[in-house]
Image (tube, rainbow, N blue to C red; front, top):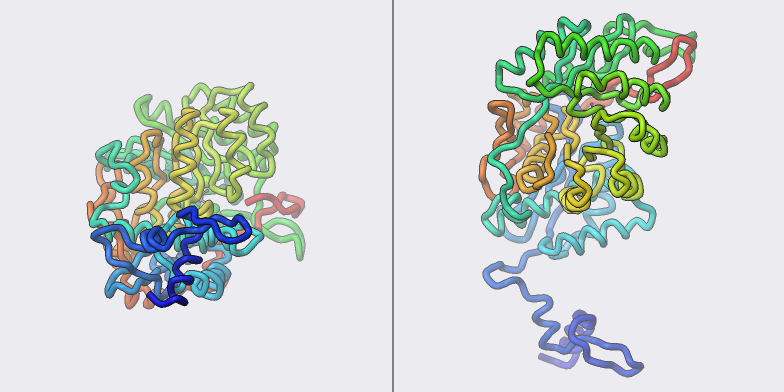
Amino acid sequence: MNRRNFFQTLSQGAALAGLTLGGGRRVLGAEAATLATAPTPKLSPIKITRVKAILTAPARIRLCVVKVETSEPGLYGLGCATFTQRIRTVVTAVQEYLAPFLAGKDPDNIEDLWQAMYQSSYWRNGPVLMNALSGVDAALWDIKGKRAAMPVYQLLGGKCRTAVPVYRHAAGRTPEEVAERARQFMAQGARYIRAQVGVEGQASYGAGVGAGAGATAGSVTNVAEAKLTGEGHFRGEMFEPAAYRRSVPKLFKYLREQLGDDIELLHDMHERLAPIDAIGLAKELEPYRLFFLEDPFAPEDVGYFKVLRQQSATPIAMGELFNNPNEWLDLVSGRLIDFIRCHVSQIGGISAARKIAALCDFYRVRTAWHGPGDTSPVSHAANLHLDLATWNFGIQECPTFSEALREVFPGTPELRDGMLWCNEKAGLGIDLNETLAAKYPIRDDPPFDLHWGRLRDRDGTIRRP
Ligand code: GCO
Ligand code: MG
């Protein structure tokens, strides 16, 4: 080794070996430096060569998947980075900022890269940057699984269960329609049903035609039926909190009478009521023994959870909108929620989710990762691996995967007997057919916009979605 290389090696590994340089700084010895940069025996050294974001909409919902390629021919990883409402901003974050930052780096050091990406923007924790980071993170776990020739759940500690129970979305204009849809799911083996009912003339969350059918899984409102409200600038789809609140206990009374006691029932409030009304509704629902009541408050109103806890024993699920650790730390450690249901690509990917699951374990909070139609099958695969390896798993949300989705994403988890099954392939076990994906380009025009930001009171006042 010539003198120049020796000093390069020395300074590269300076932190590990404890050699002291002039001025009292401790640095690595040359031998330790070589060890620090050497690959684990049996793993050839590799580098990240390319990072790109791929947009596709096989089910008409805009999806974003990150692909991380390596110097080993044919070795790449996939991760979901879908922030459907602002999807092109994620592409910019991935391709303009993370790609150059990651080029030439070692994809094996997932945690280190996570921390480096997280710090690299100085300002952090927003949905755009976290989705971009999460897409890369999941892709790195995919790569590591492929390198180890193991499914990712093995790297997370191995299986805690055979397969993963899911809940299905039963929606309808009336309680009768919801019960009918629930019966269809039950006939297919479902044991957990999320029930959402329409209120005539209103945009009720999750009650739209096709909600839960995969194409529009749960993320549409009852738009076709919604009356327009307000004048001019203030026109939108109408939502009346009082009518919605009255409709929910009636729905669950009817469902219990019709479907019996064995079926587990869930409901998503989608942060639509004033906090005190949400608390009232949680109390009124107690006789119907929900598995959980989701998003009673907006993230801005988490201060109300203490009051809710004192007032009602209805189990509470929260978290799909969270980005920042400070949003969940107090809720979990204060034992104020029962299920954490973050959107895995919104919080930092598999690396962040496994830490949250571990935190929750100590407080007996269970996981229920967000799994609507507007996350890609790559994200559903990541959820599945986490669910398999997490002891304190609670339930998994899951849409129906359309034929087109399955073709574009070979290896999409299989839904059978009310559960998701892992295909046991190395990594996340899922692929993306880029040629087919290109046949389903995303569109930016309003019909594809899922109508966010248009919900209004009768007088035209804008409401939370
Ligand atoms: C759910 C969610 C979704 C979100 C959607 C936002 O519980 O499944 O509330 O339907 O509204 O993912 O884009
Ligand atoms: Mg929800």
